Image 1 (cartoon, one colour):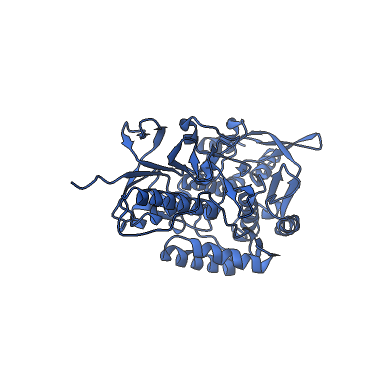
Image 2: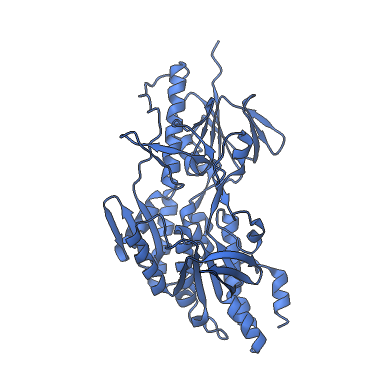
Length: 449
């Protein structure tokens, strides 16, 4: 009688979950991949959808289509509510309970407002396509509402508030968003409005730390700040946000509080791991990430792997030292491959994996850092690649081709390359269709001004 194949459940089809699934394509294993959406999302370019530079299909691909040839894998579009470690079951929102022999948790991250969750309503973040669509509508309708206001003194104050765009957090996402918003105001929408002076549009980038792109070397941070200012972005470092509401942002700098009237606020200041980690009843760090050992397992459960943004993992270096693994897509991919190879090794040891002799993977995970990239705008970027650091036009070209290379699917690469080439020469962004205005209730109230 043939032995029943062991079961693996992968939760999340981000970079880590997808890498793990593909690594196990030939394994004698029954895999169930669970995700709340039906698509894999290339998150590094999500801000391009939010700012009308790319359409959604350019950076997203259906999971079922991507993995259609993997016969040992079943895809479920479902939400996972919790993990029962003792019975080795995953509980779904629809009431189902799926058993597993191995489990890979790759649930990703969500926004963190540092205990001020009420700010989320007025300062949306950017993690999903739904977030991008809402933000795009908010940005574009701000210009439309400014154009529709009458020429009165009261309306002028509201018009300026509509033309103020605040980005909170000067990491890669915040820098990219701020630079792109400045380009939209100064180039993309030029000559399209009659009542508003687009030179009055202001993009303010607020950072609580002492410099933008704090994860980069200081000289590259300085170059990034210079490039942002050249695009017209007002950079404010050492600026702490103390309040956000529908009318604007309260900030504190050097003990002095100030008010910024703005109707569009973007949150790029912090992330928190998926709340799914809490259901494991294990130690979590301040960002809600699960503490894992060198094998990316939780204590006492070698069958459970936690990877990507959910994991508080350490990279084990050849000299015996350790360093934190950053929450970036290359790290998630490497962790997914590592977890998959560990599972293959366990299957082989138990004679469940046939027909292939594999080298045993290392006992501890090591992250190979290939560098950091951040784009600021047209012909403006910074790159930190090993011994080489450069900025400006060549960094922008390097960033462009790296992102096109890692996009999923040839069609997506071709479409993005064509869109970017056209945008480079024309400054135009044609993904500017808004189904309905953001905050419809507010638009009626402002029309009375």
